[in-house]
Image (cartoon, rainbow, N blue to C red; front, side, top):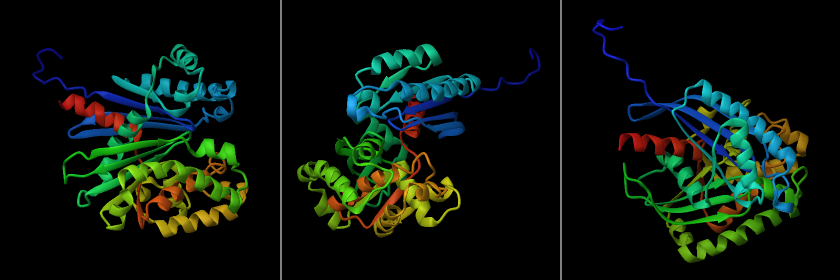
Length: 330
């Protein structure tokens, strides 16, 4: 009130990051605070936008309808929370679909959300920005990967010590993700032969990346850490811990030995769809995709003999928010 003598209270910006992937639609809303941000709202829904894309290069009507329904929820949350800055990105499904522009126009008209289709390089950069705080600065190098629905991003990094940003040496986008692999090889019931065919297909795409960077020799010297961000790795960690429900606080930043990850994979392969779906860390929406994700991880570990993996339950959305905060501070 005028004349009250009270200083006006500064209103901190409200930021939003939306990640529309081949399989998931995810939203984070955060308020800035000294040194970073605090999440105040979140939303995640499996929409399978890329369903059938590997066969016809078009987003299907049912997939677009499912995705629009999720984006309407996101739009309502963005409006209700008074968001002052939003970045909404679309990844592999929209990069590949010939009708992507028409879909993005429809999203804008129906929800008010302006979607931006980003490159695989930008996708990797944002995922890295989101999970970089989990990198151990005492190790000079890192392989960071993000298993998506339609592709897998892999980055080879050099670290320069505490408080310094990692340097990207090289990056590859492998055009195999959990949805595309499951559609091609099947996901309901996967036998050993089919599983190893998936592993082999992914391995073939990673090998040229290894050849031009000679990462394996550095891994064998114990000078490389492995950090993964995806539903696959968080699921494997949850199953390995025997959680009765998924708990992010127990998973994010945890370590999983590759031996244990492979043991969980063998266990999941022996289960049928309904048995996998019954696990509280998997559920029906991911029961046909989890084996494909395991195949991607095993391919990575076939190329590079890592002994353990650090799990990140964070990634692209956190990277967008970190970008916002950096701009505000600088």
